[in-house]
Image 1 (cartoon, rainbow, N blue to C red):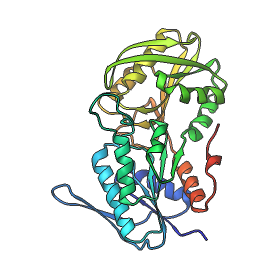
Image 2: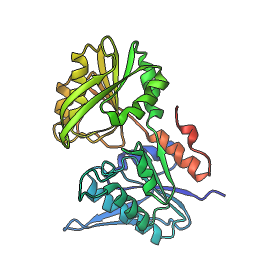
Image 3: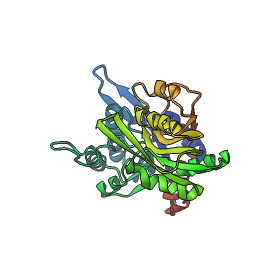
Image 4: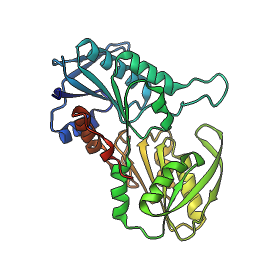
Length: 310
């Protein structure tokens, strides 16, 4: 017999949690978050969760406070005798620190996994991790959802001819290949070189660009420097149009200004992170239905593979 499902949200993702709850067909649970004058956080469940299957939703963008709040929510749920604690992180912060790429550097993603597990999480549900190997950092079940469930139908609705899928760097070729296969499109790879984080020094296009409607595919747009530079470069190489599809709109620093000034026709993204400001060039597709369906299948011990479009 399935346990009762209760969905709660941290401060950062309440806008998304409310939509997920609506799709799931329940009311968002009552949770209070007290912030002391020195910044200390104390989340408290305002209803019983004893024996319940609990879903705690919190993306960890602008990560430090959001991570700490989430860890305390997990601890509170454990001490309140929740039967199952499902930690829902639509955007998994620190995922870019997935390996030691230089001496004496941390592996932040592994530390995150340790913290979540130690706090008492029984399962992690996330979407489009920056690096798939992060799944191996956990010794508890992890459901890795895919935003193509909302992106593919939208891209098909555009009915673009002479379509080409582009990866903004060689590390994203696997993701771009999946898009190219599903949409029956050509593939382009952009070989970029960075001198330092968030700064691209050079780019080289591999593949036919001229006369193509190009879709750039990536998981994260942070400063948007790579995306906008790639879009401008592709248009200079003879592309008919350039759109970008990214799951997590971090969009920090001068990102919005860069997008507005760039030759990008459109940036299609999701609501794993709320936009800081509106932009005519940015279209947001909600991933709430995907998470709501995943919750139902997880609660009923059903496979979630049907949620993936391949």
